[in-house]
Length: 340
Image (cartoon, rainbow, N blue to C red; front, side, top):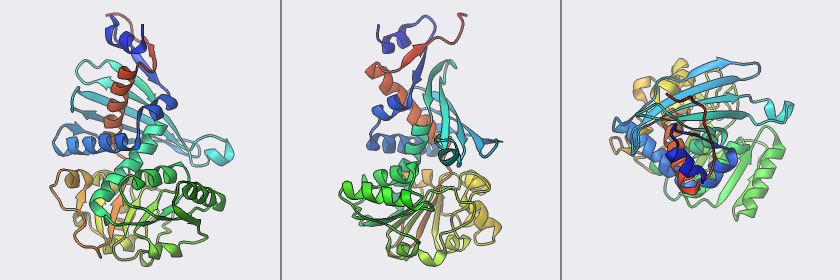
């Protein structure tokens, strides 16, 4: 009996275990974008909900718990626990982000799947930036700077190349070897690319993505040219910051979640600095997806997307991954619960 049949027909619903390899193999870049867009659309239509995330401090990092419900097709609920420990790669040879997603049936409460969360977090974050770029970047954008050339930088470059005619990359990282490695990979993928020692090249870019673990802002407002789209991705906890607050005063600001960004995003620091009021935020991404607010309004406008990562993205992606796994007969079914 295949895993898919075992999960569907068991007298007690089996839980499907899905590894990093399963998750990565079941999804293409376009699939992540489709799932994330469905999640934000459901949020706009009242078919998804997510309470405020919870943070637990660890030693040298933190645990983030995010949960959401999703009612497109079969109703589902998901809870993700991620450990985010920035020093892991250098000190322990471990990934910065590790964790798992619990996906549950929204009608019965049955635990449908336990899946690796690192790949989901990586790809859904980049997909949300690509979704924001559809509305906020100029369609003819060709030059990009990636600040932070780890896994998230790579994922963003891949996701944005799916939707924009990118031709040139500037790669910057506090560890120059990582910037050089990304530039080499990009050149092998037919993109003109170079590693930079500083951020001056940002002045010539159509897009700038910041996905670092910085605790102090490094992208100054005067580095961002007219018409540029900035994706601020790295600040996902209150102590992190990448963006000069003054840039918020110059830009059309869109957030993934206003409450979250006020609590833990770069918006938090901009508001604290008096650079912007919360009421000046143009929209949440769900409002752009639903057509309730416009995106970019002129070629000269600077647009800024503040990303903290929402549980709606997680549940929408996890739901699609689970359905794909059932269809493909992938994963390990296990019976965790007892008979009624």
